[in-house]
Amino acid sequence: NEASISFDVTISAEADTGIVSDDFPLTPQNMRFHNDFTAHPTNGWLYGTCASGGIHDQGMIYRVNSTGGYQTLVHFTNNGAHNPGKEPAGRMVLATDGNFYGATASGGANGFGTVFKMTPEGELTTLVSLTGTSGAAMGEAPFGGLFLGPDGHFYGATKYGGADNMGTIFRITPGGEFTSLVSFTGDGASNKGSRPTGALTLGADGNFYGTTGTGGAFD
Image (tube, rainbow, N blue to C red; front, side):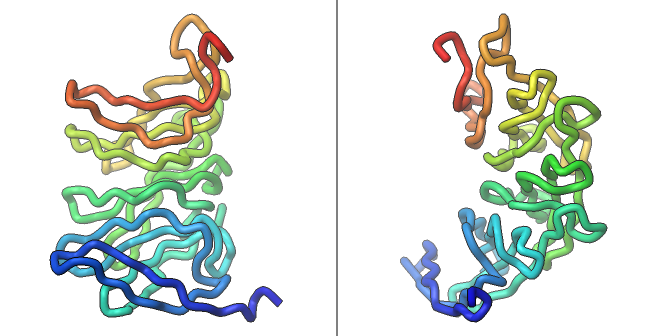
């Protein structure tokens, strides 16, 4: 019976004094398929997400510390009224306002994923529910998570959605103002490529760089 399984997992993190490791209980109801941690600079907690698990098995957000403390902060509910979203994707970003920002690959009001804000104590606000191939927030499945740009806005890519359903690049402000920047076209005349899944990276020239899984002239 899967619900009765329980075992320990070791969490390691870099600290000022070197490597610290602690064990905490792991069961099918509190984490599976976890993403990378984001460290809070002052409260001593490491914040992580799991694409599956939680009391609704839709994914969750938790935090751990170097003394073995563990707290579940958010249980996602897919399209529920509280904590909508499913399968949180990528590492959360800690912004200058002290809040964490992240994305879910599916769920939300339209089933195409969400972008959210969360306080360090776990209060979650959904900033946008993605709208697929049309609508005000085109895109679906932002697997790469978010990147905090030098302008204070967040940038991300979606694997699907956009005008040709081949993926998008978007920008969103901390207040939830969403802009679709690119709709990929496969081997079209512009915006070649499709199915981006990784995170964007900011180059020294001030431009963003990324990859697509398919598309382009030789697909």
